Length: 312
Image (cartoon, rainbow, N blue to C red):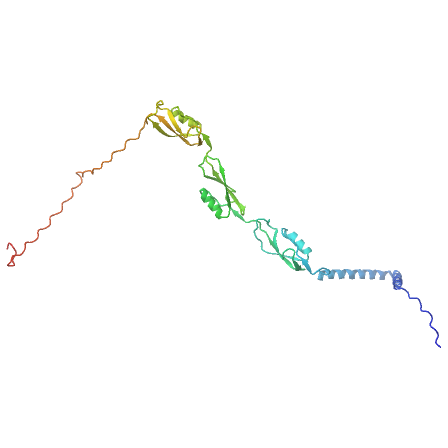
């Protein structure tokens, strides 16, 4: 008859065993401090080496392989590079182009576009702005208004006209802004200054006085005496100014002329026109008379019946 087995020993929980093993290892390492330092430095070096190799050869380890392309439009090159590197993308540069609304040196557009998905490490091509196109204003010296406008418009400039009061004739080209040779961002605006003519003044009254008095009054007002005509039927005293044009109070360009009419006869009447003789003049004695044509020779007499000439 077999003996009955005794009761099984109580099972030690796993946690208690782990804690007991830890306390034993700690006591062992405390008795061997050199081994403790060797194990500590070894484990630390292994962890650091593993982390270094992982980051060097597997930069995307633990991160998604597909990323969203960030929007770098309007950024400078350094800012765009940082934004792309943070997203795990590369940067490449494309050609630059003119643009009137984007400052030079800033990103004008990108490929792939912002918001698209791309594999990590994909290069994003950036196209930079060169700023607006610039053209030099041509010279217009010696050109008339219409010629200058046509030249500027052919070169792509917008032309605006500005009138300036001047003693020059109305419509005369006075100047241009910006000056010739200036580089202007396109589409550029060029302002042409045109003369609106001399200022206008009110014509003074010169009737009732003499011609010399009228000339003095007009000169003092900035005008000049114009054509003088005479009225022989006027009842005014001889030599008095009886009419003027423009009339007193009318607007006249400074430097313009005022015509007057004087009572009396013209002291310097134009000479009478010479009469035109319709009879042709006789030839002078020096001119040789035309020679008369010589008479034609007489025809020979007809032959006689006997065959001899008449008179033989």
